[in-house]
Length: 508
Image 1 (spheres, helix red, strand yellow):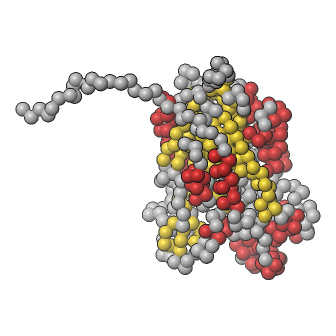
Image 2 (tube, rainbow, N blue to C red; image 1 turned 180 degrees about the horizontal axis):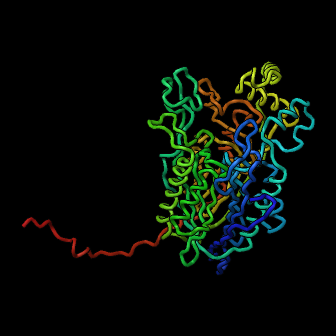
């Protein structure tokens, strides 16, 4: 679909009602869902690597999916976008426009990327970022790296704003329930402990030097369902931690598209909005380096991951539906601050310049790629030695959605869930900006290493960044008061036993 068009795909509504006994009235608490298309064109750049790559086929739609909630005192918007990440600038522009058009405060809007590696052209660097750099750096940033497409970025911002504001316009009464499913067969920690004492990313299936996984996974399938007052399902939110790297043949939402298809098929609602929020998956992918069998092809992998996550979300919806309620208070907190970048040594920078000048053919593709990244990082640090980061916590009843802008290691996500006093905590990575990989401090230690700890123009925050994000998220969440968990009515007391079953064993 051409990005110059602005089609309305599906806009469905949901709403919630809750009482305020002190006032003796029942102010409106409402919610709504809307989705918009952000499918890139054939020929646009495909993000996900460190060099140029272009889309050549179409597989399935990429979308913006938005949910808006209003409890009569506060409005919040939760937005999921089918992108590899979302930049701070896009978030700030979109928030400002949403606030102007429909009144939702920018600080009450969370925008998270699914991390689809088969989505539209967005890059860490924006036009103008390297204007003051040397001709060599400009060449590396523009012609040897993925760059944002200005037209696509403008279209993306328009669609984010349109999705939120249309949802806001269509708020209606409904009820909500929350649950957590369990799926542990499709996601794996890609970092493995090796006999040499280090941890490698993807050391290879069958490698005899592998000892074990270097970290855990998070099998939680966080699920929020919203129904109308006649029990028709109006929208779903799903939170799960796994890289979106199944990469079917063509432009795609990645496995999130298969998850959406599964939920739509199971519910019989071909237009069901499914807002996806990526969990802490910096070291989690669908690839099992200790697999006993060959990997499926890309199409089957797309369906396997998305199908199983979608099926688990559907199972959870079936379980929680009876308890759906309308006492769902909202709240939000955020903190914005600066974090320093790690600085490459002078010797490393000097060597990187030499390798870049040799070219990838002579230096070797991998060595040249990361030399390029070092040269670009060196230029970046001279202009911006620190990075603006945001951690946000949004409450939806008994749920705390806690965001960070990183490809965040799963252990930190588990730590946040443990530290939060909410009955349900969904960790949302790559939200409200992007800062690359943020590993644990252990991963930077003597038994660490691997791809995620490489120092690049994409991943470069100081070693303590991950702990800062976790501690901040926990603090923000714990400043808010959890709402009650919507539950089914208690069973009626029945002291008389079933007459068929209140007998001793009959042996004769």
